[in-house]
Length: 263
Image 1 (cartoon, rainbow, N blue to C red):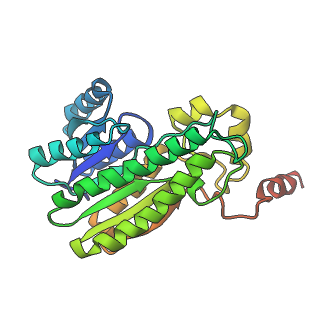
Image 2: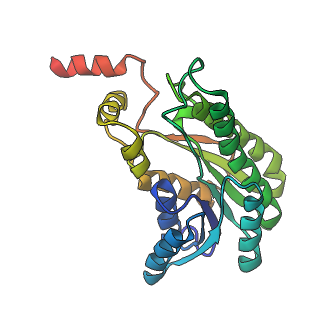
Image 3: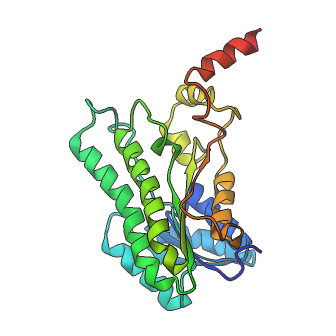
């Protein structure tokens, strides 16, 4: 029980990586607050987990409303008395309109960068006074923030900024025993990936992953549990890529691999 009795907030927690993080944390003994705009969906998942003996609560959070970050944190702090872990999982993208420099609308760029970066900044700022005995802030970033893509200029820029912000928070808050680390998923088998990426694109992307498969949400959640637990008590400011090796090899890795397999 690596997270026994720790109070954990997970944003955007009702599906995908956020739900996997919730599942993993409660099974390690944490009390998890599922922060979500769709409280009906959150309550459904909470009931399922509580029926299994876990401890899950729900708290309203609308990432598009700045005041919602403070109200979310205050609601949890008032009920639980403290906050030990914050998982900033929320993130948004607009693949159909977030393209390259020449073809991305200014408003799409500004809105995406603002919302993604603000989600980490505001939530992290709000929890500081409630991490009474220190704590752990974990930002779910993306491999897209460290490996430039041919599109999604806004999304990649926002995630790169989050990676840098992670290090700044780690340095600034170490005096309060608050750690901050980031997990960078690669292509992960979530509903969002299935809904937004074509089969052809996924196949092309997989050619460049040495482990030759998409990641599972549970594998991203395992990295989060590590950063949330005392196993990482001396680890802060780290940017952990969980991508099956994507970005490690030569840019022509996929083509060379195909040639080798044909021999």
